Amino acid sequence: MERNNSYGHGSSWADQWDTSDPAAPTTVSNKKKSGGGATAKYKQKVGDGLEKTKSVASTGMKKVKQGTSSGIQWIKDKYHKTTHKN
Image (tube, rainbow, N blue to C red; front, side, top):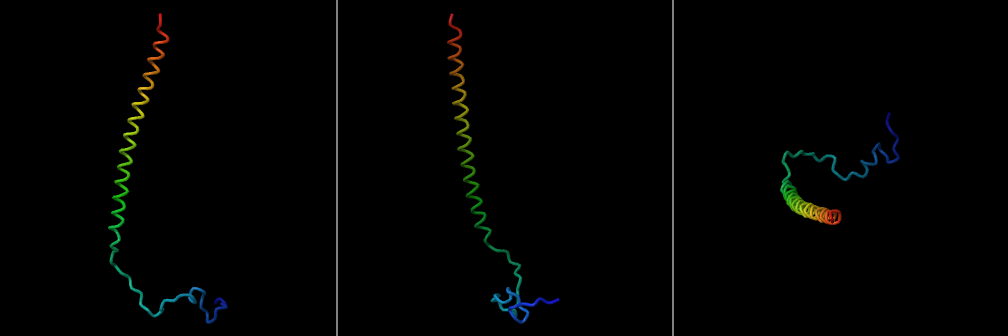
């Protein structure tokens, strides 16, 4: 069953707007693209950035841990001074 197209001669909308030469041979290339170097370069940059972020986060967590420990010790000392006055 053939469709009745208003474009004429049985061509579809895609055929009408296709500018490629239908007689031109299509070739399939087995070559790999050489664009992989750019991807590797960006992966390296992102990896370096993540390494820096990891280092900064680790340093920050150590400071938070030390500050928290100092704060808790200060509270314990204050509590001890107020409850053990005889």
